[in-house]
Image (cartoon, rainbow over all chains, first blue to last red; front, side):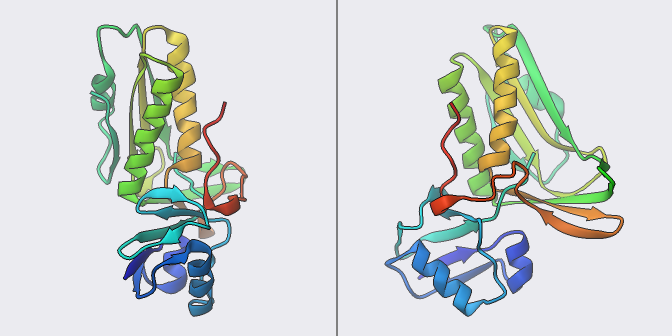
Length: 77
Length: 153
């Protein structure tokens, strides 16, 4: 089981702040593709990727129990 | 004692400043970011900041580490507020203590620029005529491959 977190506009697009999914051992890019298929209204363009609160790249493999976030362009400060 | 924090409460500016005071310091530079009413023609009514708090605090801490590497002997504390803020409310406070004044200005500037690059905090603006999540303040829309760009030289 993996957890995917949603922030800012993403939360409004799908009405959820997180979901749990059964699959693991897949690359972030594959996960992203599946999410876009399951939630066509979700935009994950221009996002940075975080796995377990650390930035990661699209090729990184998501393992069981991992927490994944697609970080929209940030606007703090 | 340095600290890096996301808070839903009003920021106590003095507490941030006091945290970096040390005998070796000859300067403390304080940056206070506040909510601006007008951006061009747009009139902001209020703002809402949201964060991925645990990761945001890690990234603020990373900024502190980067500052230590670039300016040895410099101490930094950073606090960013989240939740609903009104015009002129304090959104972020950065306090930098350094032996000499030049590094305190440089490190303070570095910290706020890095916040806008790597810290997962988002701002939703409520205007007189609508609302929108703001992104891409640095106009760097493309995050190729998901990883933010490395520390600037």
